[in-house]
Image 1 (spheres, one colour):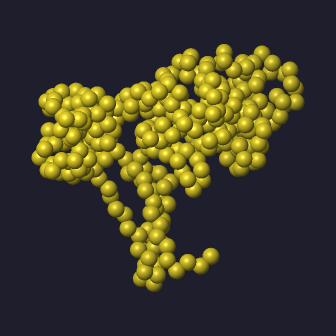
Image 2 (cartoon, rainbow, N blue to C red):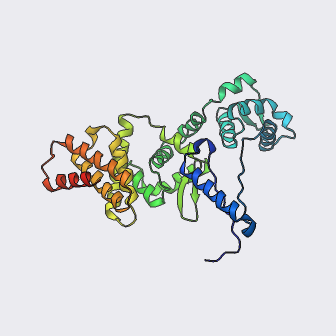
Image 3 (cartoon, rainbow, N blue to C red):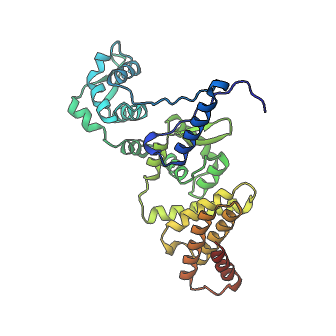
Length: 322
């Protein structure tokens, strides 16, 4: 394919990508090649560091958002929010929404304007230092079934389509006819986005996914939910083997993480072996080794180690080969 012009933009968090990270190494190689050929091809590579907004910028944003004539009218609010968010615009928006939910910032229906009438100290106490807590507070305030929707989505690493969400929520007792409306509520609240190009749904921000994941704490309730989700994913993979290998990987990860009493060990051993074979077929030997060892652990605790002689023999042969 011949192209006269192309602009490629890549984005990453510098605090999560150190010099030993594969992405950092790839970018260094790209820069070296482009610098060598820049004179001939005139194709530069530029890095732009993006930082949080400054105090004045946050003041302008809040003033504009709340319909004020000047940032000085929201100076106290700006100071508190900037202190909590350090200028991260996503965190700023979440903090402002939190203040509205707690009625610290409110719309005056007599003056027809947004107002706040609490002190700096009170405002400071209204906003958590942890943005995850702020988002969790928002999610907790959603209707029960919408909350269940976003929690389930957080356990699915891929973007989800409508069919998958209906199937998963049906397993939680939600009528499939309601799912589209629940998704609309989540979208209107800024929790998820509709990716219209591929007709799938994704979290609006990875911090929202993280907060949703933490809504149900580790323990029996989460483990039981993971088992139900995993069973749906396994059924999905069995019904459509061509396009749903990912579902087996997700199911294996979830089931390996729950307490042993909830999942028959022999069933989980077979699932791990199945996923290991897929990994081996793709050349992902490290992942396959993890699955094979998980399989062996399940087999050792199943009490049926040699009940299926061929299965156990195949497992040991794969372990030796790997």
